[in-house]
Length: 284
Image (cartoon, one colour):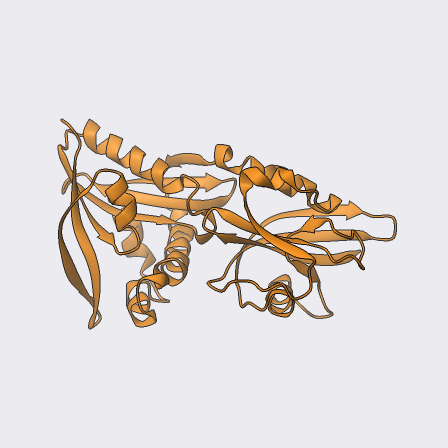
């Protein structure tokens, strides 16, 4: 059995696929970047090494997304696929070609046989996302998602120091549990992977948090959450909903009809972070 790890590297709503070299097995078929584990190497270590060697990038490896076993004429491979993220642009160092494609475009390419089931799952992913109310068992994965998102997505608009105080390595889970339980909180799931969450403070008519997993950006997760929370606010008789949008999320809320009131700076552990007070009329 050959152990193989592969990375699902998302860039917004597109995923990186690579075409195998002409002089290797499964020549010119498409695959997700990765490779064979070396002795004593974990799948995560393997992916970091392979992406550095083959694509010239440094990646962060997240959850295992899927696994598959496939028997070729000369060997049987066990593949583990991991969600991964990078801020760097990949370079064509070893593959014949590479592309960034949407989930809908994946089926336009001929993949290695071992990848076929995963391609079908990714192609259907948007329709498979499930929105449900918050459960107490969701708190730990929510905190993990929050930290990852701030330190990857929001890092494009804030400094590392600002992200460190916004989402520190140590977060009070009891405090979050209390807050999420007191608010109207919804989550979006892809199987057992948390794709996003958001919460609404009904008493203050305040849209509190909205975060989407780095690998689930721009496929409708934030829209599902925002619509559910806005509907809950309207049903509670709220006429105007307020949000304090980050630099990163401001365009999203603008597109949903939130009007800018003013910019403000919020102090966290001696560090100032800019956000925007915005309001939306719910038409009641």
